[in-house]
Image 1 (cartoon, one colour):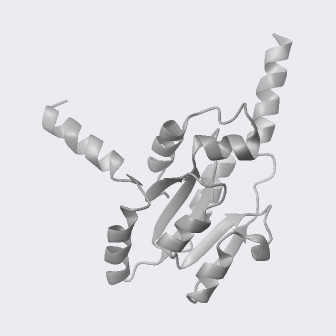
Image 2 (image 1 turned 60 degrees about the vertical axis):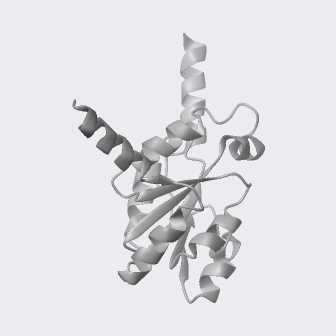
Length: 173
């Protein structure tokens, strides 16, 4: 691969992983182009089919899908000391390469509330384990005239179930 192509690929990959400060300029451009911005968030520790279907459905609500990704420290606080299994850089990279995902932003708080304030999405989406009235940032989105939705889970797919299966398989060895 030529050096020029390498730098282009590196820049385009990193261009899909932004900081919360860098997203502001992108949002201005998308709003000028009348793009509908969708936001969701999560840990996305071990990516599985349920995640892919969830993100694909989330993207159907608009033009640009922004995924807020919990930092490693945030995941530890929420899920326990043994998590995450993959670090935030790897999780961000994998998410950024998925077809429905336009941008990934790592956030460091336990909730994406501050990030949602910066992004001001038109649509806020979470998984079916949340009732709409429980979704963090709902007040911000609805105040701007946006909508909030929950997407039903695909039964049989969860990170917890995947971890249990792996642990059971290891014990059998």
